[in-house]
Image (tube, rainbow, N blue to C red; front, side, top):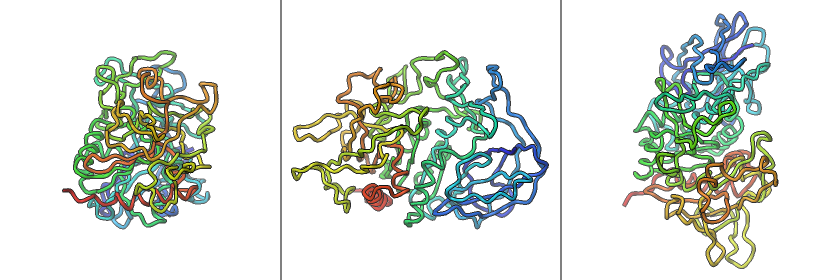
Length: 487
């Protein structure tokens, strides 16, 4: 048995000695070694260490005394092993595999098998930001840690922000707490990110990478880039992340939200930014410790942050929907987005029609599960020509143009098989125009902001399941990878 975690998921290349990556490993084997891979068009083995002495370490117990459960709120405190990050490592997304003695005969990982335990990911950033690309790919690490159950083969620990969470009622800030220093293996990266990262590299779109923590800590990070990518499931954002992203757009930077459930919960990093707290509506045992939860972005204070996420993204999960994790990723619709405004630059070269010629409008991504596991939307109303237009009553910018829409009819009548948005979306805001709908669109606020409105855009594009989605992504990257000239 072997497992581990990294001290920080973002490191800078530089120097063949001193500093760099810190790993924390626990094993019942006498010795272990580490294998390092770079994830791109392929999964390339870049280095393998010698042997290190192994030792077994236990996680801290659950602070609420839950039998047989570890703590999701405390750092697990396993001994650190510091390793240099060589200058010749190409910046990008990396995996470290923990290999116990006796397991070294196992085949190396390949691009089709990165999901699993006994491995973690981290990004290597260049010494000079923006030196390789003006596109910055943000890996949604806060969301990853919120869902990290710290399971391992033979032991379902089931501790996270959702499973046996820890709620701090008397602390400041108040809320559920999770530590970033826990093992968890590779899961979300394999599903959402890996296909898209491979597609980007195969199609000659160089990108640089960062984590949520990088964006949180560095107010000048985005100044070296022209386009920020948010990919897959990007649910948890800090105040600083919001502020830095909004200033970036105001100053002419572009953002592509190839994601959904985006910026749904506000988080507060703590413990030297090795943990975070968020006052959410997740139950602890059989109780909800605090309702309404105050770390939702859109509700007005004191019951929320009073900053609707769609003022940045154009869309919100409260106008979208999800398929439950009990049947993840669920029985999703495959009709795709009904195309609107087919003459927009985003649709150039796709051949898609919007029905303005008297025919039926085409549907982007038809036949695929483009309308993802979770999806976001804008409040909208139909005009006299049957075109969906954002009403702005939910905080969506006036310039937001709906380019694709999918009205969310329940896939199953049973509520437990399909959820409209979130309980504190339609329940707390029942008067929004129109039924909930997944919404793809674009708006300008200095720079340009595109939103896919679905978690699974990078999957459909990365696996090239739909030619239209691929061409739209190309159009998007080709246009937004350079800031427009300011007047």
